[in-house]
Image (tube, rainbow, N blue to C red; front, side):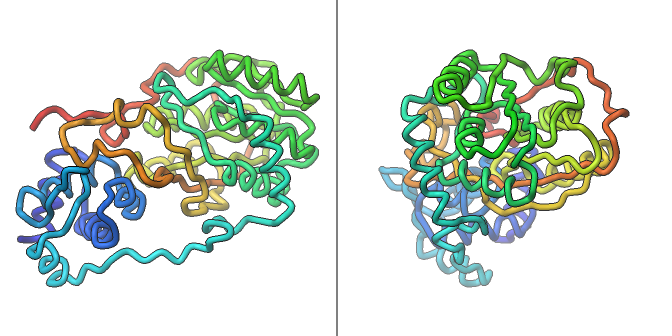
Length: 357
């Protein structure tokens, strides 16, 4: 059996370009763990690609699927990995900062206060493809943006905020102003209620990314933060809104981008869009900076044709890399207009369900 043939079969089923190295990395994850969601996490490959590689292995007797959904290499599977020199994934991330390169003891108080204030937060819902980051990620993001000189005394635009990042930023006492543009009425009400009660310089308004940026916010902010939907159209519209909101040259944007819902081909297309259309420099990409809390609607929103997929995650498996971009020129050539598009679903999306094969 050839790895190239496996990659070709997976491409035929998913329409997501799949390489031999992609197959190797999924198998390397499988050599480390029997849990599907940990394999997705360690392989850093699109969800549907991982599922199809494992199903291909199952159909050829390389793995067995237990009653609990665990995935076990068969003797033939172990021999296959050995013959192809595929070894178990190794993890050397710092246990203190979880690989982010950002942490100080003083952040513990901000984390404690944030947890206390947001204990009654709204839960993530499928309507807007929500899923929020962990507390350690929230405060580390505040620290990162502050360390880069983009938060203290600055005006911050937050595009979408199920993370409640605006509240953490406000609690830090660093930004001059935080404006949240959010489509979910629950979050708009919650953020405004908390900010008012605590006296934070934070306000939230209802807003759909696809609408033009309100004119009062064009060219007003020093920094923007977002966790964009990961279709190319969704990424483009979010960057357009964020950058349109910036004052100009030298201002910065921060956002997360996964490998679970974005292949390297999509990363390449998006990076070219950033450089060529938006005239920005990509100054930072911090691997797996953002860790997300497991959301309750996960299993009901994804494919259910493979038993090993329909298992409850044992870890916070969903991760994204943290991007920082800096504006090189002005924003005059960005047209502030409505941009109707599909925000959430393409062939690489977690909630995309392939047709029966």
